[in-house]
Figure 1 (cartoon, helix red, strand yellow):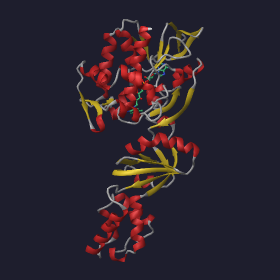
Figure 2 (cartoon, protein in one colour; figure 1 turned 45 degrees about the horizontal axis):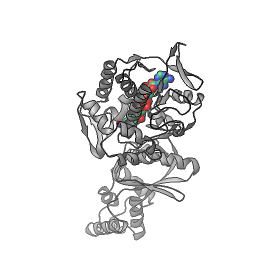
Figure 3 (spheres, protein in one colour; figure 1 turned 180 degrees about the vertical axis):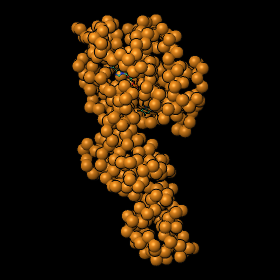
Figure 4 (cartoon, protein in one colour; figure 1 turned 120 degrees about the horizontal axis):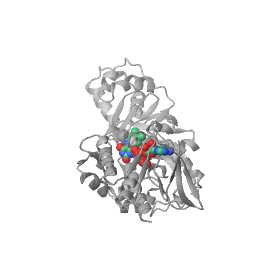
Length: 399
Ligand SMILES: Cc1cc2nc3c(=O)[nH]c(=O)nc-3n(C[C@H](O)[C@H](O)[C@H](O)COP(=O)(O)OP(=O)(O)OC[C@H]3O[C@@H](n4cnc5c(N)ncnc54)[C@H](O)[C@@H]3O)c2cc1C
């Protein structure tokens, strides 16, 4: 949409083709329906948000960055707000208002939209774009094509990876697709009991052999099959890669990141002294969510009816260990379909970062999630899609 708008604003005749009956199906889902359209951080924080390939986006960000994107919407009457971690949302808290502005602007720039039409293939002759074929066999001749078909997750939104196949058959290398920002499955059977439990203000550490990564303090969610939530999603791309090489990947949950083991032990001792006859379950109530109490008592192998003054030093230490480094084994990541973004895509080596034009086919441009860049949550992925779309639209119009 942004690519079409930019090309249209430069006086080009533009056709936008989408196989869906409506615009921006994935955009409508984004940010839990509120659309975290960008992040108000500086360029450095953006480049950090893109783990591996962020540098590729420097030119696109220089051309059209977060301030320009925010101005784009605000100058068209949509007020925005900045929330925690500098995440930017429309004040309406509704992604449909973002799509609404884009829709109006497409009309303003006289872009012709064709819906419910699937692009089947692109025609390339002598290293140049000549046109494209729709599923109904109609041929549309054109000198420039901007492929913006997205990744290959949440396929019901239309992102099914067909554009990547077209890129591949026209000579581009596709870096293998893996899920990014994806929930993880665990080997333990806890999920059945813990499903829906959110742990707040905790820290997690993923380990595999000599590798380890430690999260910020934040939230983890138990799902029916394992773990999800912001902390897990943010580190999941790395874990997906580790799981390919190493079967022994685990996570350690620190439920009390503000206290050292020693401090926690002292706290137990103090409590045991002041209430020696208190049952162990009651003592744990002050430290743990209810759903975890029975589980921890069982895991530590302790008689649930013991009183504080009956607990041995060893048993107390077992609790401290569970609270500070509760270990769960990761079995696998959820499938590609469930990733919030796709890792992999058209290799950056085949794209000119100054124009987004293919280095292999003249007149063919790429933008958005189909390129081999992906980022953390926080509005980075959509900013990348808008920035590369804007640059592709401008380059295609001006070249
Ligand atoms: C649940 C969820 C929440 C998210 N929330 C956020 C968020 O809050 N902030 C953020 O920054 N990112 C978020 N993302 C990621 C973000 O939505 C994507 O990175 C972004 O939508 C990618 O934009 P795109 O235009 O490249 O691709 P898409 O948005 O996937 O659009 C691709 C379009 O191409 C069309 N298409 C595909 N193939 C064909 C074909 N052969 N012919 C015709 N049309 C075709 C599709 O129908 C689709 O409309 C979220 C993702 C998910 C799944």
